Each structure stands twice: as C-alpha cells, then as structure tokens.
Amino acid sequence: MAGDASVGLAWGGTVLTVGARGRARLGATGPAVAVAPPGPGWGEPRLESYEGEATLTWSGPAGRFVVRHHVGDDVWSVRATVTRAVPGGEPRPCRLGVEPGDGSAWVWAAGQAGLVVLADDPARPVVLRLRRGRLDADSYAWSPPAAADGVVELSGERHDGWDRVPGLLPGWLPRLTRRVGDDVELALPDDVVSGPGVTVGPDGTAVVGGVGAVDVRVV
Image 1 (tube, rainbow, N blue to C red):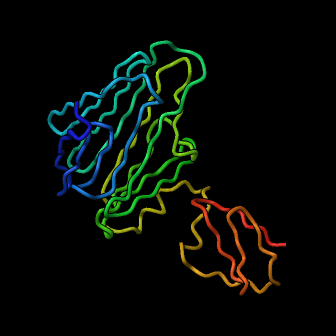
Image 2 (spheres, helix red, strand yellow):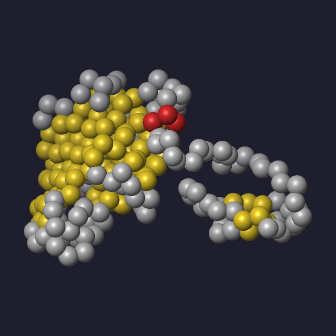
Image 3 (cartoon, one colour):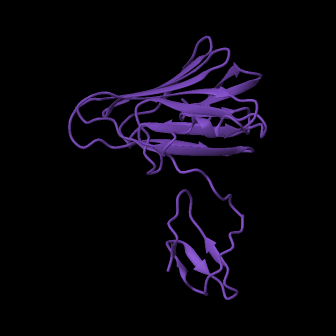
C-alpha cells in the first residue's frame, strides 16, 4: 500500500484521517498521534476501514502488529497489539509519537498512567487516556513482555475547555508551575544556578532548556 494512502473517519464534527503508516490526524492538518511497530521485520502495512473503524496490520518475519482506531458518538479509541513470531528474548519497544500539526500536542507518560492531548481547536482539546498497558517517558515507549502478546489501549474524548484536563492526570504527578517563557525571579548571587541544559547569561538571567522535567540546582 502506498505510504500516502489514508481513510477518513467522521467523529465529533471533524474527520479523523488515518494514514497507512499508523498516523491518525485530526482534520487535514491538525495534530496527530502515531503508534509504530518495534523496529524492522514487520512488512508493509495493510489499511482497512469499516463503519467507524480503521485497522492497520503489519505482517512479516518478526510477527504481526495491529493498530485499530475506532470512533463512536463521543469516544475515539486506539488499540495496538503485537504478536511475535518467536516469543522470548529482549523485547524491543514500540513507539507512540505525536505531531502538533497546525495545533498543539502534549504527552504525559508515567508507566501505567498516561495522557495524550491533541488540540486542533485551542478551546476544545481532545484528551486520550491510557486504559491498558503502559507508557514510559523514554520517547513514549511501550515495551510488550517478551513471552506474551503486548497490548496498549487509549480512549479519547473532546472537552469543552481545559478545566478538567489537569484533573485527569494522576494525583501524584507534579503540577506545572511555570510555562515556557515565564520568568522566575531568584534573589541569589550570580552563577549559583546550574543543571543540565541550564545556562546563566552575563546579566544573571538563567535559561532552562529541554523538554519535560528539568532539575535545577541552587547552591
């Protein structure tokens, strides 16, 4: 199947465009989520659709990998399963990725808790919650067990605003205290702030780089 082949699923006033490489995009140019098989050896994907559902199937020497997108009246579900031809050995991680497109996209991955937020409409984000499996923060990887089939499943709904989104995160996750570009004033001597990706300018301004949690040491 050509890599640019796709099917459209009508959902909640928009179209979910599912492509032959496992990417599902809100509208034509909005944010997208993609689930990819663990490395080479899975062959070319086959894309099929039927009544609100699109299924991608990879079959090759490594085994069988299936990604299913299903849309109902309110819920969009994503389910990926992997079956190895030869069980056992060290499992290679599958990958879940996001693209902001013309909107924005976020991922919180913390093992058995995970959240993916896609905002094609800045006032009405789509929130996908991890329902089965696990997501790890290392490039949003999920590692199926070596001796068994692996499954990861997410379900999503569109929200009228952002008020409920923080409440969907696990209570033990640290809360966002500063957004990108916000200033934090520290009444400290120069050059006492350090950490990975942290630089201090000649005027004493500390710049923190990186994505996600960054440890900043103050001594």
